[in-house]
Amino acid sequence: MSEPVHDALDRARDLAPRIAAAADEIERQRRLPDPLVGALHDAGLFRMLLPRALGGAELDPATFVQVTEAIARADASAAWVICQTNGCSMTAAYLRPDVARKIFGGEPAGVLAWGPPTMSRAVVEDGGYRLSGTFNFASGSRHASWLGGQAPVVEADGTPRRRHGAAERRTLLFPAASVTMQDVWHTIGLRGTGSDSFVVTDLFVPQEHSFARDDPAERRYRAPLYCFPQGSLYASGFAGVAMGIARSLLEDFVALATDKTPRGYSRPLRESAVTQSLVAQAEARLGAARVYLLSSLRENWSAVGRTRALGLDQRVTIRLAASHAIRQAREVADFAYHAAGGTAVFTSNAFERRFRDIHTVSQQLQGRDDHFEAVGKFLLGLEPDTTFL
Image (cartoon, rainbow, N blue to C red; front, side):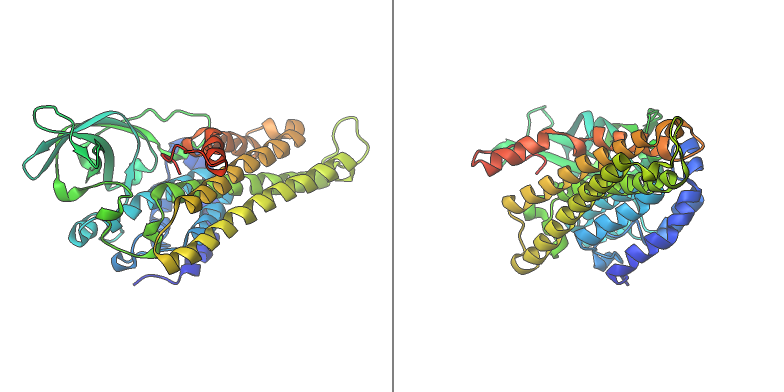
C-alpha cells in the first residue's frame, strides 16, 4: 500500500542527518554507500513517482520538489540520485502491468536508471529489438536493478522506421547485469551520483520492455501525475536539488557571520552593513524563486486533476520556473561562498563541496541558459523548440 503523500517529506527530513553524516563517504566512494541506499529504500524514497498500483506514492510534483530539496540540504549527490531514478520510474505508467511489476516490484523495489546515448540503434527483430549503444551520465546506475537506453528504430535492412512522419525512437529497458559499465565519473561535483557510462552490445530486448517516452498513446496508467512529461519532473526535481544546496550554503554563511571577524575588521561579519544587505537580497532571491516554482507546480497539478492534460503553456511555465530557480540558487550559492572568504576554500567545512556541487548541477542539461530562449519564443508568439519543454 502507498504511504500518505506527506510521509515522503517527513521521512526525507528524518533521514537527512544520516545522509549528512555519510557525505564524506559518498564523496570518497563516488556512489551512495549500501547502508544508506537501504535506508532510502526503507523510507520509500525510490518509489515516490511510481503508480500506487505498484506500491508507489504517486506523489504530486510540488511535494516531490520539496523532498529533493530536503535531501539536497544534507547531500546533493543523494538528492540527485533520488530525483533521477524517480523520474525514470514514471516509465511504469507506459508498461504492461506485469512488466512494470517485474521491473519495479520486489523488496526492495526495483530501481531504473538511464542516460542519453552518444550512439545507439535498435534493430527490429521478431518479438523485439537488438540493441547496441553507449549511454552516458547514468546517474544512480550503480544502485539500479534495471537500466534503459533510447535508440532510433531501424528495420533489419537498416532502413529507419518512421512513425507519425518522423524517425521512430524508443526507450528500451534491460537488466543492469546485461551491460558493461565504464567508470568515467571523475568530476568536480556531484561525485557521489555514480553517473557513469555503460555499453550495450547486440542485446535482445523484448517489445514489451520498450515504450515511446511521453507518448500519450502508449500510456496505460492514466493518473494525473503521468500527464506530466518526465522532463517537467526532472527540471523541477533538480531545481529542488539546486535550492537545497543554496539554502544550506546560505545558512552556513549566516552561522559563520555570527562569529567570524575578517582580517582587518574590528567587528563580526554580521555587523557589516554590506553583509546585511546582501544576505537580505539572497534570501529574497532564493525565497521568491522557490515560491514561483512550487506555486506553478501546484496550480498546474490542480488543473491537470480537472482536465487530465498538460498543455504546452503549462509546460512552458514549469520550465521557466525551474530554470529560474536553478539560476537563482546558483547566484545565492556564489554569494555565500564568496562572502565566507578564505574559510570557504578548506575541505574541513562544507562550503567548497556545496560550491562544487551547485556548479555541477548548473552545468547539466537542466541548467542550460537556452531554456530561457525557448520560453521567450513561446511568450513572444513564436514557435519554440519543444524538445525540453
